[in-house]
Image 1 (cartoon, one colour):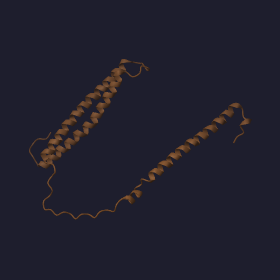
Image 2 (cartoon, helix red, strand yellow):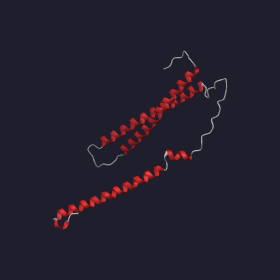
Image 3 (cartoon, one colour):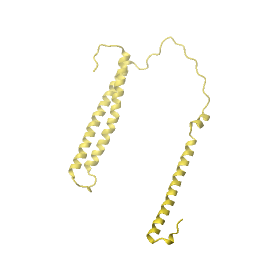
Image 4 (cartoon, helix red, strand yellow):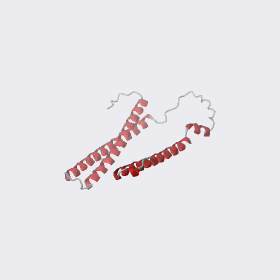
Length: 171
């Protein structure tokens, strides 16, 4: 340690600040180290090696059933095509609504921004908040509609493959 009585006032203040900073830094590091040790202790109880001791022994496998006929499909091809078509219609509706809401939300945000040019302390306008809400809802509808549409298309394709070859045109 330095003898701070031999230093001028400004230097003494700097030395005191450095010592205080070092003490605080070591306390913060000690806090984070305790948190890390606690987290590791909690995780050590949930390891896969520990979990394997709590599992029952594996059951004996059943002998395979002997049957001459292959199992029938659980869903008829026509029903699969119909369900896929319904999902495609729902997905397309969600995509259209989501696109309209997102575009409208962006337009409202632009309108609010143009309504207050150069104003930095005006706060949030009603158009801005409404535009952001429309955009968030529209994005959520798009995020739900696109996978629904794709899943419907896959189901329709699978149903058409189960029906067999046909001469119908596919678009």
